Length: 171
Image 1 (tube, rainbow, N blue to C red):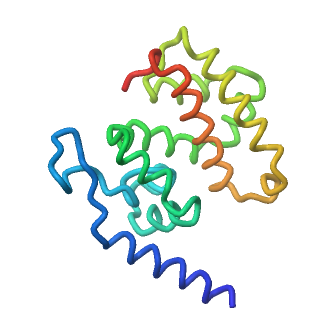
Image 2 (cartoon, rainbow, N blue to C red):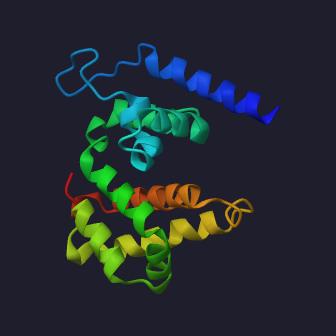
């Protein structure tokens, strides 16, 4: 039964990823923007080089809503900088979680450096990440979540913190 659900989700993701999901880029040419399901959202952040995994993750996470919103409203967020931050989070989640709880640390600084945030803004961004993570950690499902899911929560908290301090971080 579980395998049929997984197969159904994968089939749905494949259909969605191959369907006409064009978005408008800055030049407004239809189809010139990023593919929202493979190039944007949490899926692209977690799986930047594995398109089918990015699509599946985006569909499973929130039916692709975040990815489509990102691609439509701000296609520039579907860039390498955010992908590099996501990969850094995946590779260093345990250190980042500990340093975020402490409010400082070299991994935390490195992640914000990758994202292009000013040194002056890092304390405020770290505070915003801590606040966001407090709500995620309080979820009943958090303690049983795997590292990929926890990394996704952390990435979402970072992007929220960066958005609150967008003037202090490079676009």
